[in-house]
Length: 257
Image 1 (cartoon, rainbow, N blue to C red):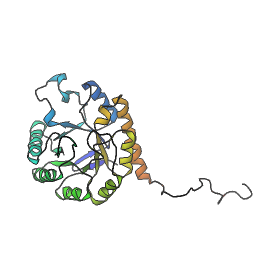
Image 2 (cartoon, rainbow, N blue to C red):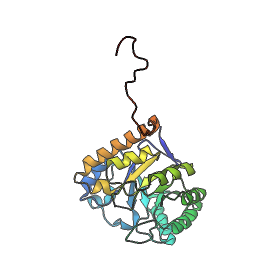
Image 3 (cartoon, helix red, strand yellow):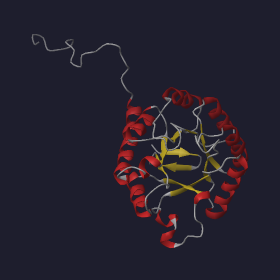
Image 4 (spheres, rainbow, N blue to C red):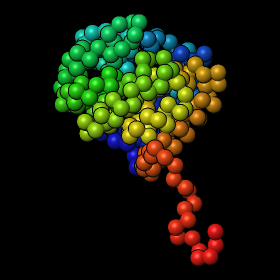
């Protein structure tokens, strides 16, 4: 079943970024290998004067939808202005809202994020906010009209994986809109865990871009996302303190042992 975010529909539940790659050809090959249909672009860090092969946008595979993001913004006002610029440039109303608290932890400023979200939703944007794994904040963002909630798994670029899985489970239960893990993923198993927890999708960048082999890692992330989703839908067996024989005696053919 496809993932619905606002008025947009996606078959792939793995979303990717465009930063930190050693070169544009590697980025393009990795994006293709990931199977992603949605790719983030940091508006404030994009060279708008670059043309042809010098432009990052030239290397994004055809068919991938742009997700302008407000990376590098530390106030609601800056984030709102950046989203408006993205809409002027590309006509996009789907945006990733990112308002950081400081440049060391790169943790979200949830107060400023909520302030920006309320304005952007009123202006017709489809808002995907990067936020903490706090269920109360998530509910407020949903009430503000955000189309999805994007809690961090761990700080941006840390590669620490899902640090608070129980917070993610609680958050997932508290909101009705899609939940996308954003930030902190280090390897494929982190993606699988996020999906097994019931998240609707994962957005990542550094784990692919900075891997020793970005293209192979992108393929691994794609497969992990699919496997984690299937495992969640299949329903895992309950955890037990003691063992349980996989071939019990009950029900065996009489006379055989």
